[in-house]
Amino acid sequence: MTMDKLQFYWNKSRRFVQTLANLSNDTDIEATVNSIEKGVEFKGANVWILFFAIIIASVGLNVNSTAVIIGAMLISPLMGPINGIGLAVGVNDSALLKHSLKNLIVMVLISLTASTAYFFISPLNDAQSELLARTSPTIYDVFIAVFGGFAGIVASSRKEGKITIISGVAIATALMPPLCTAGFGLATGQYRFFLGAFYLFFINSFFIALATFVMVRYMHFPMKQYLDASRQKIVKRSITAFSIIVIVPSVFVAWNMIAETRFDSKAIHYVQDIQKEVIFDEIEIISVQRNYSRKEKEIALSLVGKTLEQNQIDHLQRKLHEYGLADTRLSIKQTGGTLDVNMQANVLSRLLDRKDEQLQSKDETIMELSNELEKMKLSGIDNLQIAREIAAGYQNVKRFSVSNLAVYTDVSTGKTDTIPTLLIEWINPNDTVNVGKLIEWLKVRLSMETLKVIDEH
Image (cartoon, rainbow, N blue to C red; front, side, top):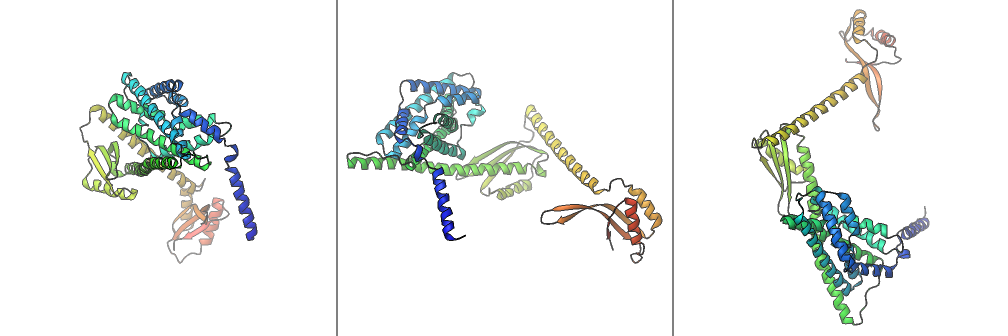
């Protein structure tokens, strides 16, 4: 193929991709800006809607109902000010930025007040799984927020068909549950819940706003112009400074979250694998704690059952290197016989379950080997009778075996074939006159057309 043809196909492919990914044809910039500015407004009905939505989401978290939480997210107006911040930074609109920040702060305060009040009077004080899931952000929350923000601003900028997509974005990015969880932490005095959940809300909000900013710039929204040139410079510098102040810590946070997620993944695989070792046959791991910080990483195991010896603990510590956890400290607490009756019963039950699993695995292995052995046997053959007949007619045979032998016919693909094979050893290796007669007799006796012979001598 000539260079001209290559250039032609390259240009054609590039034009196709550009047409496929083009956003400008269906972008309604003026309507999008008006829609986001309207969504930033927070008064009257929006205040009541937010309050009711927060109570609904709090009830959903309290009773562990996913459906109720999703319903609350669909009616929440929290996305408005966050998109407003992203738009304001993207078009250098300081007035919109101030208005969006003010309304977002008011929304957060109302949300925290409503959720804290609900959980303070609620008789259900246990942290359910839906609530616990919002107490610590992960890198996946960042991905959801970023791509949810992209989808949201692209949908908002379309002339038609935005409602369904924006509703999905509201569910995916999940802004309300973290605020409700933060209220739960305040109401119950569990401030680690408050800090973790509020941190998750901040992460979601920031990266949604960042995605809005990126898409606004990508779609070439017109920049805000000021009559006073000096004022325009001040606005640009202020917005730039604000962006740097927020972005730099968030990049650090995102990087730290990636590192923590990788540590958790490695630690989980490490614990899963060491439980399969022989030293844990009579030991049960009753709890695992993974503690991550930049200065120190730790895996803490609580064990019950047979006490580990020091050389076994050293072995477990050395295995950390195999999982990329060389800088991780392994802490082992062996509880011995200090467990109460119920805990001992639970541990014994788990140990018995593990033994049953091991026995089942061994039974399956034995069954597989038995099946393989059956495949090697020649069907319908009485080996003892054949042995008697050979002993009577061929006294020079010391021992023999007739079976199916799996032979690789194509090493590259691993293809095999089963070949009837005679393995034979003679009393006198030099007296092999009757070998041919024996083989022919066996073919007739066993009804075989071919028979491979392997002479051990």
